[in-house]
Length: 203
Length: 203
DNA sequence: GTCTATAGGCTGATAGAC
DNA sequence: GTCTATCAGCCTATAGAC
Image 1: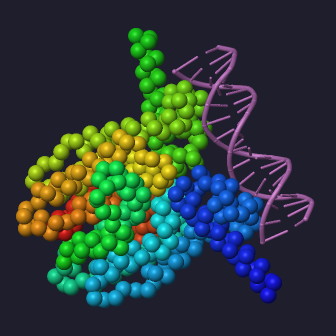
Image 2: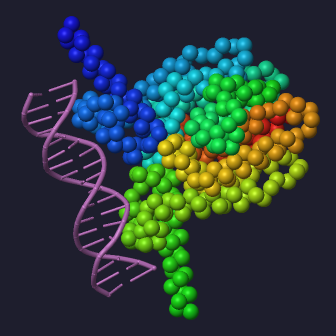
Image 3: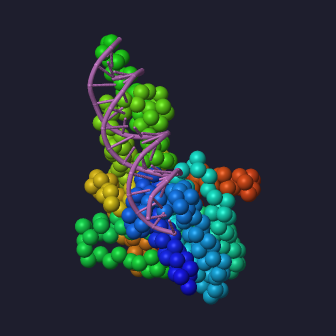
């Protein structure tokens, strides 16, 4: 029982380090985040990062792998068939919300072409695009006759969601300055608006 | 005349440093880019970065200001009235292409909420959104009756373009791996596809 | 497992020669 | 204007006490 308590404490430490690292890597980026910062936000000693995750790089990999896993699970749930386009948009929004720091970390990876994306990550992202392709293929004949480019449609769904997420802090600051009465929608609200737009575009 | 030649050389040095800095800041990010790297890519000495731009931070500000200026000029050109939605999408694509490193640098700024965006930059981006709002207001009554949320529409245009740009290197790598015969469109081609989609959505 | 102390490397800025 | 040489500061990783 004493052993279990120790393990429990250890798990909490690991979780705290992961949470702090995810937050800081996503907002500041890898190089600009110090092990000291992570340890401080996690409420532990900086040496523990190396102890538990084999250094800053190992922590980064662990965080990304965790986020990829969660997103993959959501994508694997499948779509209900009633409103396929709306379900698709909602699934992507859900996947992005599953770990809030996933999108910024991934964006930073995309922008650094020398660092190759993790194969598992690439596989997950391709799986997402396959969802879009599947929805397009299942559209009724009249609409499918348009033969939309899956790339264009996919980016037209994922792009706005990503930009919405990434821009949220700035948008709120700017909106508050210009006109405090303007509403700042939630991700789900935005996703619904986007879904309506996409349904219109694809019908 | 000798003086003019010296000035010419100086301008070339400054331009080389700006070009190298823009490339590296956009791809690697600020912290991960060393003054030594910039100088090497620019083919000059690292001390010149401090001499000409008052250090790494000053260089960054100069590069961003330059990109904002170019983008603003394109946005100020206005839209021709025949196909307003397509013209809008093309204008955004043109603004992004005007300085290829503008989008990644801006994205990184958006993701770091503690560093406030430059007021001039914010003003330019708000001007972009005003373009979208203007196009929506000018739509024929039947379409305008839909009363689309300008935020949703704006992000639905800018988001895909940004994601397309940022993802280009990775997309080409992945596509080449999976199926070499898949075409990778240019930004202009993608923008046209997106414009068609948006015209469909807004009609 | 957790912490303290420290070593070793790298970075940005600059003084001074040319 | 451009370059060389150098310094002070910060970073990560780790050895060792507890």
